[in-house]
Image 1 (cartoon, one colour):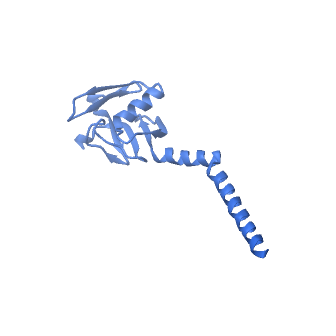
Image 2: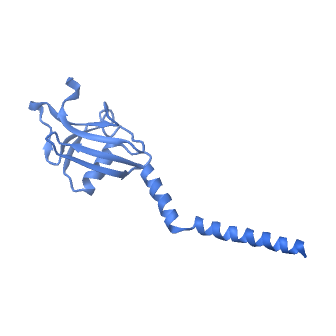
Image 3: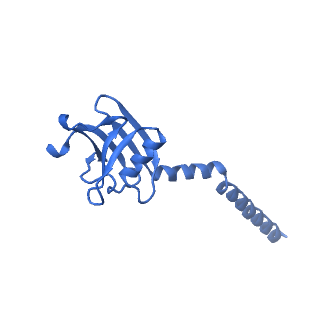
Length: 148
């Protein structure tokens, strides 16, 4: 009789554990939080510094595995109705940004749109720079870096 009672208690504890565990795994709040963390890990940030004190920042921009700086620029400007113009010089040189938010490159003042990724000046075209999750892209309207 004691053996049967022990087996019933063990079975009850086992099934209670399975029931509680299944409910925790399927809890929608838990699934939402896990999904939110995965999105944050696949995102980058973009900042526009217009060189006149105006700065715009866009966080948590979702990127794919093969995203590049230009694709993110195109996504941010389209989604936020920001004008930008560019010229494509082909595969080796890639994309050259000519204007963002109606502020165009000015050769006479030696001021151009240039970009940095994770505080490092980029030396390749925006369409050729592959991004990693968590990267921070800074577009700056500033004095030409190639002359410094």
